[in-house]
Amino acid sequence: MFEHAPIDEDTRITLTDMIKIKDLAVRQEDYEGLRALATDVKIVFEIGKEIWSLKREINFCIAREDFPRAIELKKRLKSLEIKRDSYDALYETSRYVKKEKNKAGKCLFVFVCLFLEGKHDCVGETNNSRLHEDYWGDG
Figure 1: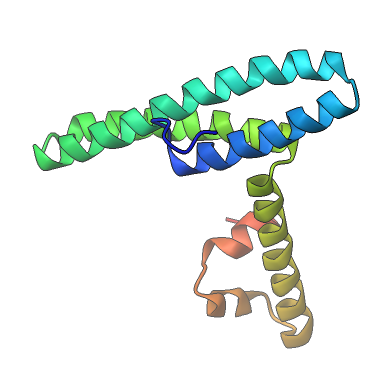
Figure 2: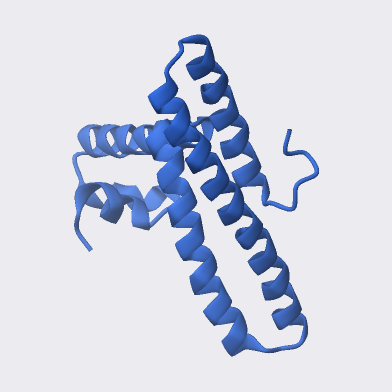
């Protein structure tokens, strides 16, 4: 449905999942859910269009060597991606589930590493120095 829409790929996945949820709500006759979902699909679509546009504009700014503008656009892009990701979490889309499984796997790895090695600094061996900070709260 959104194959040719001017939106970024992550938003395309989110919208596809939201449409699947919409179809399920139709079958279950959940009209309250459908009303909210229809509104959210429109919002996510607009967010996706803006993300796509910002990514293109960032590339033009980099080509023109207008780095201050690129930095400003990148901040706006991050803000929109966070907003879109909140809809992923709300509807538990495949992108959200994949992120949560990835987080759980990393956390389990850290726990096993700490448990088996008996030391706190073995996390550095994962090539992800933020892993320890993200899951154990030090920093």
